[in-house]
Image 1: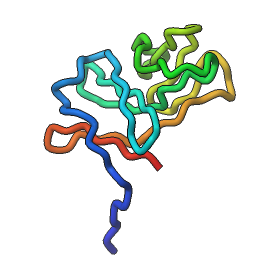
Image 2 (image 1 turned 90 degrees about the vertical axis):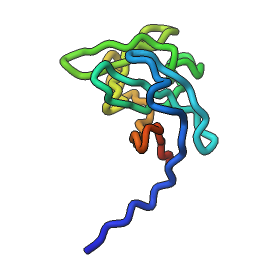
Image 3 (image 1 turned 180 degrees about the vertical axis):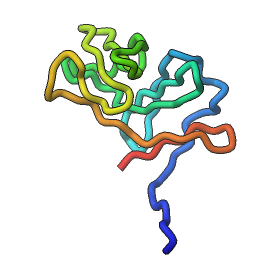
Length: 113
């Protein structure tokens, strides 16, 4: 059986243009996405909207870790979100969307539903 990948991938930028532990914002399919590159080369994509302030600022957040997992702290009120699950680690029940992201031929690609 062959499994087809039918997601629509959008090229956002070249991987080497992303600075480690810094975020960038991109508009993908009408959705603002915050993209982060870790020191080991891993790439994450979450929604750019901070659900507490309703501002599109997470790409400007402070990247860190909590419990061994990568996180971003909102620059507005400092709530911390997992870059893997999108869950807010300070306020249970609140989350930002997580998007599929990949590096292909040196390009960072994001898929939004």
